[in-house]
Image (tube, rainbow, N blue to C red; front, side, top):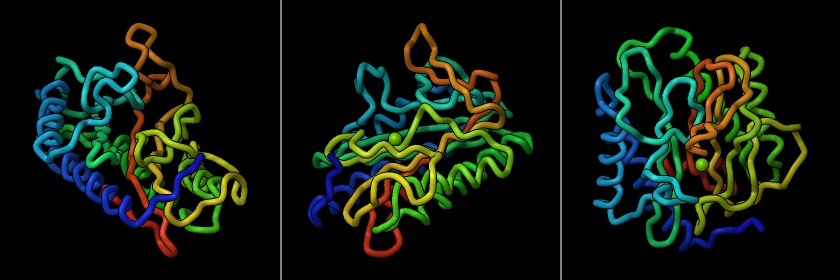
Length: 248
Ligand code: MG
């Protein structure tokens, strides 16, 4: 069931979104060679709690940290650890926070030190594909319009679109209906309505989009061919006009 948010719920969603936005702005300055992903996660948790919110990811289905930190070929769900960032890597940071009973969810991919042109362009295309997608996120359009726009933008440029992971509705729960694939057929799928709050999150690869999940930790999702991947996500509100981005 897809929930339509009331005006008072939307105010809470804006507040939760602002915490996530500020957390990602805060963490960017710590993304440097030599920092461990666990150190980044601790800063993220501290920042979210200081804002009076709770990290959504912590203990979600047993996830052991407050953020997902995914380096290079890791697409999503990287577990923070003692692993240090190295110059030339790209790192995706995905953060969720609950405030006053509502969630915000967003992700960015950052460059560590000096990054080559291929990775830089991958980050740029991934981010731009989000904006291409949300041009379709309007009352009266369909979910297939969003997915199609993201897929078309990326695949026409030679990038891969991960199929097994998708965006989602968000609100009182981090993951609500509907599931929002980053691919699709224009004009098909669930109709989009004013008052929906959605997390749109393209996960785009430099090579083949096939993924594999680490069988030992059950979380880490990497490209099967080992090539880099980027992630860009925001929580948005469907309005009567252009969507409002709650985490930017
Ligand atoms: Mg999400």
